[in-house]
Image (cartoon, rainbow, N blue to C red):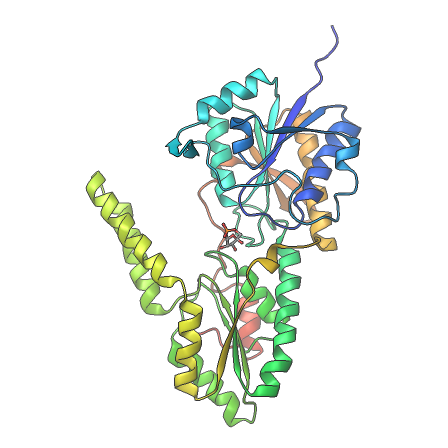
Length: 376
Ligand code: F6P
């Protein structure tokens, strides 16, 4: 009897990032061209699996996408188990499982960051053959050396810091540059080192604003009256970090529904208070140093545009290794980057974990050695 041709589904979920199309192409070319499988793309993350929004991926649709930013499939932050359908939040896991079988899929490939790893594990536990690829500009997915998107965002953030230097220098100002990264500091730390920021603030090292002001004043006394502060969007003062930790602990300890609800409200209000933190920090530094301060929020430009060569290589490597794993029917794993190679890591070991910057990481030590103030 002829062997059934494998039919693979693929989707991109969470925030977009450079390299997603390169990864889709890597998976696609390996599965179609090398192994003779079929490939179906689902639009807008997990929602495409519920609303039957699909697109057959063939040689033509995969052509010319290697260099294109964003994702040809579209993306969303929808979760299978909590999806808004007709204005109501519903658990759509069973619908997804039924559709997967009805459409004759043999495997679902999910390209995404930390949230996607958790959602993929849920679908794997519901009985689907799932493989994931680690994508995010934040570089915070556990158990992989790297995530695609990070290298490109690092280049963009570094170039921005380079450009801020000349204007900060001309006006004798402090420029506080807010860099993405969610709760991790990889992007701010990397671009801060590469761009020669004078101060780098990351969530993993809570800061004391007086210490930052002292470092800036020291520079002024030595004749340099401008400073670049690279601040991760999740960076916070020691007081705020303490309050957040206490709120998180309270949520962990909460046993009743009422206590859980209260703890979640407290946590959410702290997160809301964090919005605008960079503006407050700049104002505070202006007061303490008497130097004019300005803020630049890099925002979504960090996620846009064509992927760098490093990201194209990484995404293609991970994508093609994914094709090999599908051929071997090795499911329930994330394709991790490991040195020059790749490694399948069980989703249970990845989901719900975050790769933070260890405070003694060599990048942190290096930054300190060259005189960068880390805010502590
Ligand atoms: O995870 C990537 C990221 O860009 C984070 O750095 C940022 O905190 C978040 O996504 C922004 O999410 P959204 O696109 O939903 O505004």
